[in-house]
Image (cartoon, rainbow, N blue to C red; front, side, top):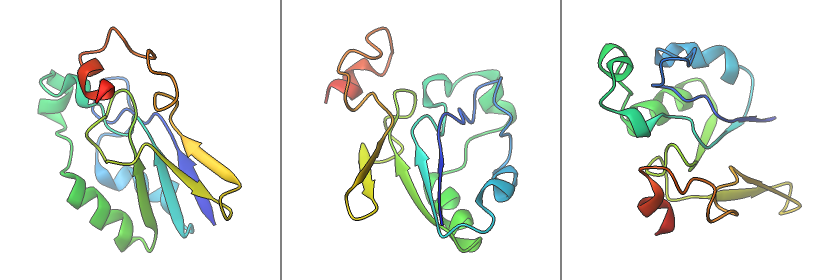
Length: 120
């Protein structure tokens, strides 16, 4: 079974994800979990929300998801362009493409501090 999660915005003050274990219920029983962009709120890394609940290193997040017997796939989003080098993935023998959207629309976040990273 594959589960796709998008726009968790972990690290933003409005996100309900505050600690890594909060993801366990979302991952339980799946073989693969695709984090479809904006998983982490990298845009506001100096905010009070980040200081109170710092984001885990990607390796730690990957290891934790794997400890729940799920294979994690991290795709970039316009708020977490450094989460991965992957902007999309395909599933079902290539019949389905999963992407956050900023990989398709060049100007999806021209206002963003990440605009230069997205441009690359």
